[in-house]
Image (cartoon, rainbow, N blue to C red; front, side, top):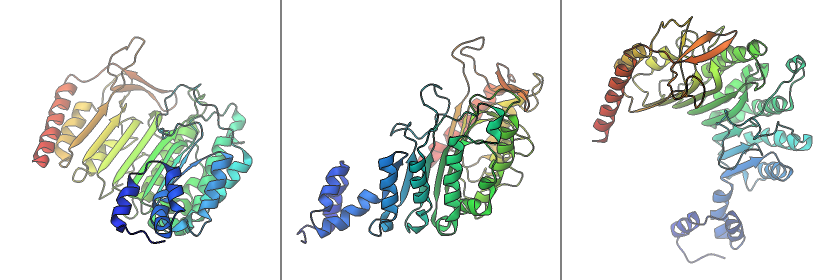
Length: 391
């Protein structure tokens, strides 16, 4: 049956249909509507780690009628709400139960992920894993938790089809990425997934029950080795435009900088960093400066300048002055400093941190006298540039 209505008008009407069930019903009423509705319904697949969702996901990626239309795949742990993407890692520890994946569900999900290379239009992949990861004993370093095993299985599945997926993958988000150095994450086939990205979001999850020193090496090893390797892979073709790198606890790395010297993305427009300390070991100050001609948006969330024995070396004022000169394209500056709701520092802005790699970092209510004035001047420059562009 051919409908006596212009195709463009039908598309406009279908765009206003908010119910998925209504769209599925319309899809069965005529060949014309079937052809128009199918891309709308299957352009974005939302997947959960449940028996029903995993089975449907596997069936859809195996369907020749659906494959051509899938552009986005979003996996969201079943403990996350539909509106959550897993980036709020500092949540109530009792709000989410530990991951306890059903083996059959995991196998179906991994099987489906291993077939994403057959989706010719897929360019966006979001992976929002469970926000709880606890290794209760030292044996956890040898016998991995279910949460970590599941992540590695998904990553291995994606690595197995990177030759087909990598050339068209433009956006990759991984939230609750477990901070555990593993060969899978630095294998050539997995790194290939990063070669052509335009948008990368990594939100790293550390062991919530760790104490200073006990799990220090896995966490610091991950940030000082795995993360730099991933970032360098992303720089291979110079296509990256947006980078988000968030931690759930203050990170200052050894043995390598997070942002290695010389790491650059010629097209980078947006950078968002959370809980990464600013010092020579992270390399963030120089990284931001290197992108002064392209960076338009900079967001620093609870980032602090690392101090030694309450002695300020590099100050925020020095960075504000340097960036005010270097960031000639910046028009959007987002800053959020830690302000405790209780304790001796209640309501105070903690812009600096004292500590070490071995024993952790603590925010302190210290700062150089010129910090506020330098920041005010920097903000004024950014606002002036924004107004000039709008005019």
